[in-house]
Length: 105
Image (cartoon, rainbow, N blue to C red; front, side, top):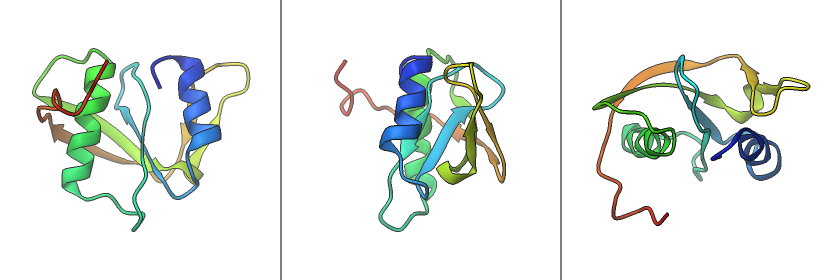
């Protein structure tokens, strides 16, 4: 999502409960949802998603601090657009990859 409202819509209307949600750890950022047929993203998918997340969050750096969990472990905070609480989260530092050929803005 590119905005707080977009983050809410992405999570509540588009994502499935077993999809994976990503956010920059400890920073204000966009949300990214990974839809995987197997339900479990590997390192390549996480690094790609982290790179997309960093780009749309205007994060500067070579490694993105990422927090992720399944969508079913999220709960929207009433009255605060885009904010969620979560459980069963994992923390990573993902190397950013070049996504310029994948993204059209």
